[in-house]
Length: 136
Image (cartoon, rainbow, N blue to C red; front, side, top):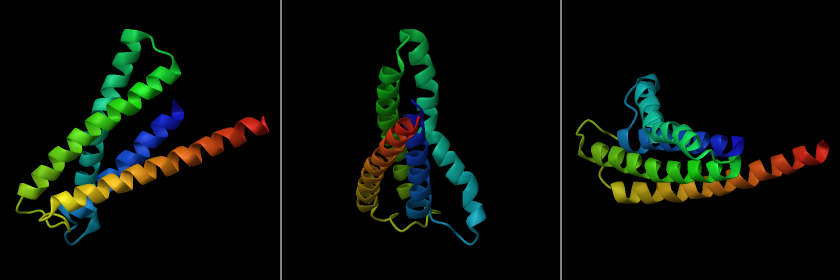
């Protein structure tokens, strides 16, 4: 379960940063983007943070089943939240991101990036976990 939590957190943070830069845009001071980046991160991850404990209480699932549910729940809710943010950014005249006028290209690039990062994180975390088990 900790590896799923690490993957979800890193992927959510990367998605929030990408959305902030690619769709919203950073104006004059990068510190101005901080609150919106935090809001994007929370919107992407909040539904999983709510659903996983409720699922565990309801089903009393073991760690493997709970981890699989957590990642599936995150994938679905993060996709829906991201699409909502992208649609909002495309309609917002104050947005100044690179992909504001072409959200389909930006969304495809983000999808490819998130999938590649997910596989890389899975590989790295499995290797770290297997090395840690061999040392003990």
